Length: 243
Picture 1 (cartoon, rainbow, N blue to C red):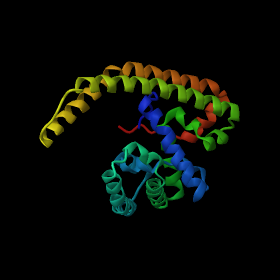
Picture 2 (cartoon, rainbow, N blue to C red):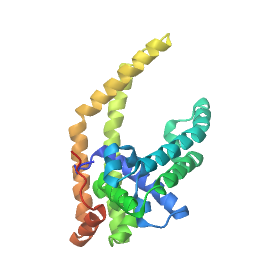
Picture 3 (cartoon, helix red, strand yellow):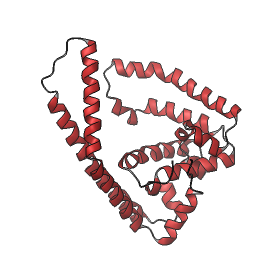
Picture 4 (cartoon, rainbow, N blue to C red):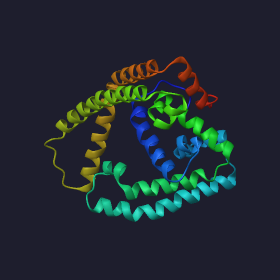
């Protein structure tokens, strides 16, 4: 999680992370640290060390994760059987409930100082993207017009990056338009080829995505005052740069 330029992948993920946090906090949590903390970062061993997790805390986190897997697995199997698009999970209230419970159970394992550090690391992980969240924006003194502006900038960047990904997907789909398979082994092989071609296609377009990401970051930063940027840097805390 070293400090790097904001990538499009991270840009696309930050809204979901912070929005989920906002839902949870509105219902059960009050502190700013709880609001911004992304429990998923705790899966990384280096983050566990940085936060200062004990073996007992790790065991509790593993137990919380296993519990959610147990209760969520039947529901996910039900959705798969019904042919539901995995993309709809981001708006599925029951599934979000599982994630909220997991988040609560993970964060309550932490001490106040550990939670604060995790919150700082979470803001570092999304770079300037944290200011898209209304609670963060208010914390650093952003106005409503400023928040509206940075969200508009972000929205435009998503459209541009999505268009590139769509072009890659369409190109890959065209290559396999007339392919027919007879066995599961053939289907698996084709899926592997599709995945590889998509990965290779996106890699070729990566310079374009990086350019969009950098332009987006610069444009968002330009909306903020020097004082607001300094306040946001303060919320991010000491830069985490593991070796």
